Length: 393
Image 1 (spheres, rainbow, N blue to C red):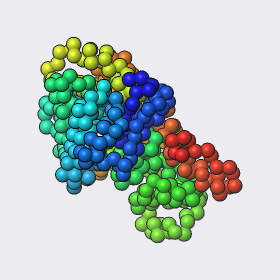
Image 2 (cartoon, helix red, strand yellow; image 1 turned 120 degrees about the horizontal axis):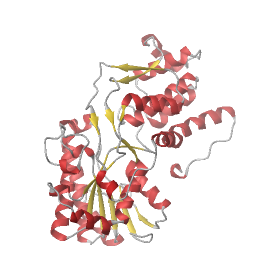
Image 3 (cartoon, rainbow, N blue to C red; image 1 turned 180 degrees about the vertical axis):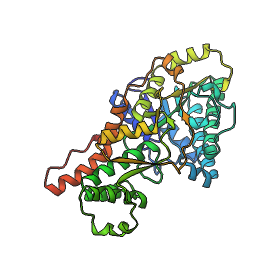
Image 4 (cartoon, rainbow, N blue to C red; image 1 turned 60 degrees about the horizontal axis):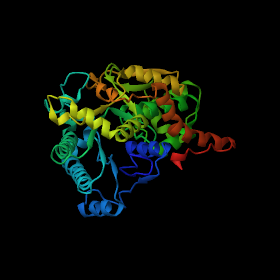
């Protein structure tokens, strides 16, 4: 893959796809092809076939998928299976039929068995039962992996399957009722910091920008703000009578589970690295023996280290500047004790993560939440508005 190659990023508006486009542009790639859902419905075979015929992409990154949490998987299992299977089958088959030179399929670490040993190795694929709470999504992803692997064996394609760990990055989902742990923690501590400063206008602006603030969290913010001597807006007085009488941000569980996280730009960098070195990588992978042929062209991408949720919360609080109390609600579940990927395969190929944890947190806060808060504070005080980053324009 070179800078004039025709590169299609499917799912370019999502967390991973937007990072891929951003990183490809920063590396000087000129011919990046994208389509919105309204322009190209990947669930419709005739549309996908017509797109490949017209655009003739040489390299494809498939980051488009229907994603959701435990509740969504349990409520809409048919949607998760059918939607993802249609997208994957259409894009993968068209890529094969139109002779693309390289293909990267983005999966998920939920494909590994629930009780697999830690850290999770690629060879553990299909060696045990899946976690039931996200089984529909995992099965769809496994089907995509198997299709890519079958095409490699039968037709000599060069389709790679990559399995990222827990991701976060610019443009993440900050909805406190739907988001994953990392963006949820960042937003909670950001709101708590604003509450300690009495910046209620910024808090209400945050709610408009990133989704509703649940009642229990709003109560926490009121108590934090009042403990610092600030008045509460009249529109929020309805929360005061039911307020718990401690000024702290409340987090679920004990904080002891260990999780691995990776910045979305690091994942994008890894995917581009793999595509740029496809010939050497396939030669090396083909020369290796494996007890599980299904995992031959499967590559984990992660940070290689994990951290407790409590340690993560302390780091985010420090970066945000929140100095108040943290209340751990141990009546809430902790979840799986540990989830860590073995990344020895990709590091042996020559790639390693580059962005430190502190850098990850600071970049995410500066890119998203602080920018929105600064706009409100600057407008109220008559200061010039901060410039928007290129990605937000």
